[in-house]
Image 1 (cartoon, rainbow, N blue to C red):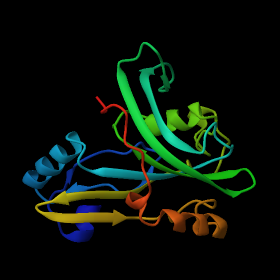
Image 2 (cartoon, rainbow, N blue to C red):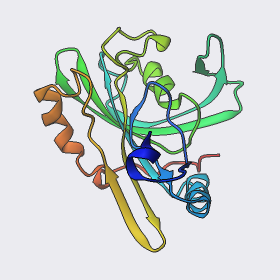
Image 3 (cartoon, helix red, strand yellow):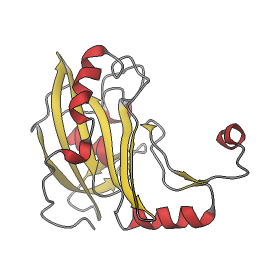
Length: 196
């Protein structure tokens, strides 16, 4: 569909999002660009930022969460002492309204469901994420918000605010998102160990 809209014969998918996640996705116009961008992802030279909404105050308001991930059942993942896929994520959070908390998330690794598992582990699962026992909503409130990287010597900063979901488009949430307009300017902590 995208190819037809923009008169491309073919596009190359550079990375993936969970089915329930909206937002930015990089598609390359040729194989060489896809390869170069793929290498930037592998080398963790592309900064990724997400927005999420949770329904409970987390155990801590900001910080870094590191945990070994292990697949459990029914397509779910969990932090587990015996897991070998270590996920590292950082976050800031703020209250939007009673029972709604906005999270700015920065995954430092690219493990399956790592942001969803992290927020569940903090006691504030993503609203609408019924797989991880969150409140049912009109959507899963996880959105790929920003990508920032240097490509062919040029700094690329892509920001895409969410436009779907009653809670994301609510005026209070829109106001709260303004604090995260340039997420790379937040005082992100330096990770204690480099992600594996």
